[in-house]
Length: 446
Image (cartoon, rainbow, N blue to C red):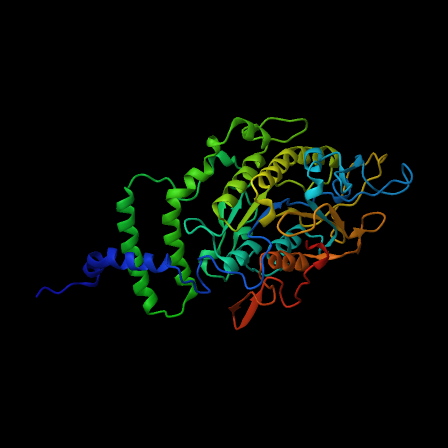
């Protein structure tokens, strides 16, 4: 009888092994390392998160943290006008007129604070909970804790991220790493997921090719029992194959009505007022589509808030670029019944000191000791301004919320306990809120 080599054996049986692997991965049972949908351990108010990430440090005193001026030049404040909106009477700057229409849906945290005024460190802490060390990002922890609601899509998608670690799963299994779409400043209409839409092979041929590779992967796994990273790679490859059928249609926004595209400012990479050319509107529209499709965590980024000189001009440009798309996203989520179980988060790594209205020196610095985030939907109180900074907006003095507290609160709203959502690495259990822990901000829960 002819002896089969290992290569011929794998070639002959690859499809069978691959089918078994696929069946196992797509089954109803779920292990801790699986991307399958998981039931949260405590009652959840939100099923998904959309994080509107504003890297660079949005000026809180010019957007959502109103400081009434008792004199024209008495103390720093805002050079822009504020007014109250909605039944709640929330104060919102003239820079955000469209977002202001949704004031009664906002939960504004004016008592945020961070540990450092260094961009890289504070941004890393905002995204991963750690200032210096490489750790999984918030989206990866959410994906790890809850899985995805759609087996053909990842649990975490990152749009237009300006830092690689935004989508990093670090030591978590590979399937919980975020799927990045687009790069810093890229036109999202050109964004693709790697290999999606590749048509040089038929779907059947691609399946057979992957089956062969996966058969070898599983053979390798047998000699490396209980290796979550290798298991994650195997599952990620299966997910990538399944995504090829669904992702292209999700990225194609041409099926949306012209009115919808206009509301999101999609395709209008021209100036609207002082609006900078930006494809932020397409990101917000894609965020809504991914949320509808079952992705757990979607991060949307609008870069360029690090304005030191020409503060008034550049801040207005950034707000013009983001105002209408954010308002359109909130409106669509509300009208489609998604806002109740979608937590929308807006903010950056810190704030900026105030300017005197008459100050001719149009420069600002970094302000980590007090700044603003806002949340909407997903189980938080609506039309609420919680916490506050001192009279000059330089320091959080009431309702203080650290990034660890924000993370703990987000996980709580998703039905996850921040002190129990852990993963073993290098001999100890790690969690998003670190050894210091965080505090759920119960005062803002609906």
